[in-house]
Image (cartoon, rainbow, N blue to C red; front, side):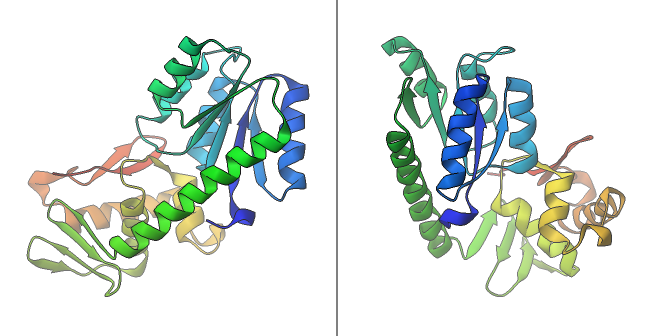
Length: 235
């Protein structure tokens, strides 16, 4: 994950602190988006899939630990908590909920940047290792050979159209995560003018018929009505 392409979501209801963090990120070359409450944060996470989340716990509409728990149901995106809560019990609760790091207020921007760099180094290592180890994707009877660009289910090789293959690979590489319609369109279609949600649904229907027998419909791909699709992990 290259430094310049990393997207960081800042979830902070205090405008002055939010501006401090976003301005610091911009100065140091990080792309960023911001949310001032929990509901907006969850929408940003599902829509933009940030690389790192900087999360305040004391939000006006929900507790930050609840957001961590909800995100961890479908995403492993690193979460760095930035909170005025200094009690060990609060830190333990956030980390147990799934946070990756905890920074207490007041904080120095140098320490925040150091935590971000450390998180990105860890992500880069994991991604490079996965790239070496996962040239072939296996999920139940579904096998994708990325090098050969082939798909098999059981012993049968499946013929897919290029867009079907691209969508399937995108879902496979984000297994367990709900991908929104807009995210899939942005990743698969070179121009949003070439594709829309209705055409995506047509391709998805065709893809599912090919990889999921009628009696096993929904085995690999789960529809989240009005939101998008998710590939399920199959034992």
